[in-house]
Length: 275
Image (cartoon, rainbow, N blue to C red):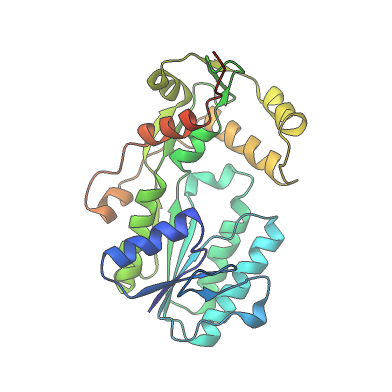
């Protein structure tokens, strides 16, 4: 049986759906499980039960500080070893993402897997097209967008493609044992998104972006402003625009157009101005 962690999240739920569509015997695990899922709380290591699981799709539990993320992943891998899981598929971060503020937890988890004695596959996922579009900032009147991305491009990838790729690997893990797949898409820019939206794009400096994150964006957790600023500077300076054939090879088709998905995400955030 295949078990997908984080099955109530965007990537986990899409991966589970792709597996089931393909006829695989798969279930989900979550801190707040739905019907037929297992309760998995990585902050409660003693309660993790992976008995009967042959392949574990470990969706990164990255929504926290690095030490907490690594502790959660350690608990999951330890349970996999204890309960006889035969293969772990981990959703990591693209190799070019080493410059990002949240890369360390991913690389630490990769190291942990390599030392575990378990067969493993690492999926180095590029940044979501949905995220790229969502990070563009609309003017108050909805007439244009701003960003700190400059003229830099991001080899963005849709969440749906990453989920399908994870399902392909999890359905036949032995074929991918010991492999690291770089799953990135087609480079797009903020100007590309703005052009498709039919609005102008105005660039802002990294200092102004950081100020807005700190002073004008309520609800961000302490680790998030530096994380988001690191994305902006990495895109701006051309560190995340490289392509790779792995995704299309896994999917057996060209990857989806990330621009369309980024545009949809940006459009959904456009302010509605009363007439």
